[in-house]
Every structure is written in structure tokens, then in C-alpha cells.
Length: 333
Length: 99
Image (tube, rainbow over all chains, first blue to last red; front, side):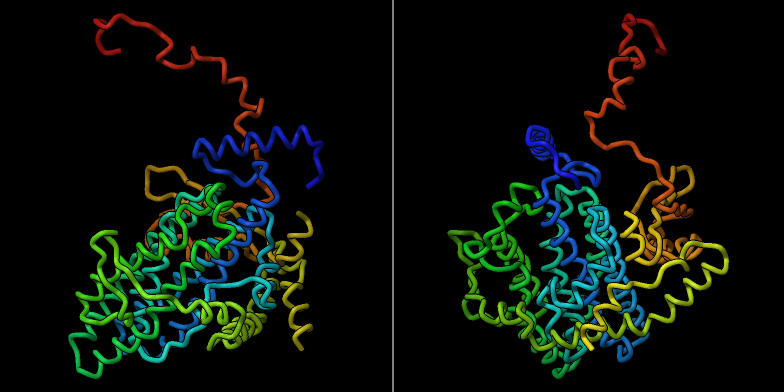
């Protein structure tokens, strides 16, 4: 974008602020401050990467699903995650981001994805608990984003939220079924709950007093509630669900506070959170390596499709597949 | 723009869906594909996993010519001062039936 004289930028900025002030959406070809664009790209890309990497922990169990019914459900769910990633990359592209470049940044560790996906899935109960807690937390985070000030992102979030509801319900139903099963199955559900409870609380991000960008993001309408507000909402929603299920949430400090009319809960281990964000979680390296392998193993499909399109006179064959990724691989080798 | 296309490999297609018979096609998003036929298949997989459409259009993004989205754009000025194009402009006595 070429630089404009100050007085013109001033007019445009005033129009941008006025649009936000009236609760209207910013659309792709509107003028927007560079920082808004950069923040939006970072937020949408991180969200897209989370959906794509998020296919792995559950995809791990597709071949070992306990029944054809569960297998069909799990495949549909993982396919949805891929779809959500695609909606979001598409939204990021409306801001001038390039899809191959975003994938490249993910593989190089220059853009993040949600830390929750760096934890392993040890039993089939984890599939249920991910649906219940992880997707439950995601819904808490995402419902307000349906009102994000950036139009393409908010529209993608509307589609995603509709589909996430199935994700959470299939998980809870799976857990209810296991809780009606053997003592061993009930123990698996409890164990999975123990392992995923705290990482789920971390999904809302650091506490408000350590989240320096929150104020600007709220002013821009790209964040509607603070991290701590959403975390509290999630705890309040989840405690009765745990009771109904018959599992214990692994927090001795979890008690109803009649004065606040909210549940009090114990301190989150933010050192663990920071360690996982910095790449030292149980599965960080494995997740990125798997993403790279999936891309490499799909190369022949992309090449074949390009060749087919070229033969039929399409435009697909004229350019090589994702040069940015090839560069990334050369660097890694 | 040109550089983006090279880096992404495949061109960008905009996707329009007809939700059911009797409705217009509506823009739902975009995707990359090697050719229009592949774009249609991808659009089906990506945007109609739950019976959201009975018909799909895909259009190469480069083939779309767009106006500026800015509301203050003088492009739309010709309709701004023609209130007489609206039925509410005309005052008709209350006791005239069927109008």
C-alpha cells in the first residue's frame, strides 16, 4: 500500500473509527490501520493453524474407533476441523495474506496454534473429553467472535460455531456412554478429565493483567470479552455438566461462591502454559513434523492436479506448487 | 496480487451457493483449485457438508470486477437523492383501498 498524505490518512482513520463506533463491520477493501490488519491476520492465522493441527490428536484414533458409528462420527468431526481451517485461511487471504506463506510460518514455528493440541490423546475417552472440554472452551471463545468487527472473520465464525455444537455434543454423549459401562471405562473418563481440565482452562490465554493487547483488541471489536471473563464463564458452564456425568474436576479449590455467584477455582499453572507455547509441550515437535509430512506426501496429488488442469487448458499448471514450502524444507534439511 | 498468485500455486475461486430452490446464489467464501471443475468439487466438500446448497457457482476471483465498498463512495450517489423512487414518497389518503 502506498503512503498517503497525513490529512488523507486522518480522514480514513476517522471513517474507520466511525464504522466501528456504529457497530458496523469492516470489509476487505475498506481502509484499515496497518496494525488492525496485522493483528487480524495474526489472529485468524493462529485460529486456522489450530483447526488444522487440531485434526491430529483425534485423527490418531480414527483407525481404532470402537464401533463403526463412532468411527463415522470421528471422521466427520476431523473433516469439519479441516473445513474450519479452510474457512479461516480464506478469511485471512481477504486481508492480503498468502495461504502458502501462512502454512510456511506455521511449519517454521513463526506463527502459533492453540497450545491444547500439544497434549497427547492416550485413550478413546480423550476423544470424548476433547469434544466436551476442549470444544466446549472453544465455543466459549468463539461465540463472541461471531460479532468480530472484521466481516469475513465473523462470517466464518458463524459457520464454525454452528458446526462446533455437534462436536461438543458427540463428545459428551460418548462420555455418558462410557460412564454407563465398566469400572475400567469410568476410570478412563476420569483420567482423561484429569489430564485435559487444566490445559482447557489455559485455552483462554494468560490472565488479564498479563494480556497487554486485550485493551486495543477490545477497542477494535476483535475481542469482545477478556480472557478471565471467558474462563469464568467456561468454569460456570462446565461444573454442572461434570456433576451430571459423574466425574470429578481435578481442582480441590473449585467451590461455589454465593457472593460472586460464580465458581471459585484454583490457580492455573502458567509456567506450564508458557513452556508449551514456547515449544516444550509433550507433542509440539511431533505435531509440526506430522503437518510437514502430510504436505510432502500430498505433493504428487497437487502435481497431478496441476498437470491435469494444464492439459485441459486451465491455469493451474503454469506455476509450481507452493514454492514457500519447498524453501522451508530446504532450510530444514 | 500477481505475486500472491504465483506463491499460492493455484488460482483463487469465489464460491456462491443456492441454499434451496427459489433462492438466489449467495457468496459463501473462497478456495484454491487447479481448474474450475476441481473448484466445484472442493466447494462441495468445503461448503455443503450439511446440505447447505442445491447448486454451486465458482468464479475465478480475478474475473470479478468490484465497486469500492466504501459507503461514502460517490459511485452510489445517483440513487441517494431520488426519494421519489420509493412508494413512501407519495401521500395517498388513508381511505383509498388496496394501495
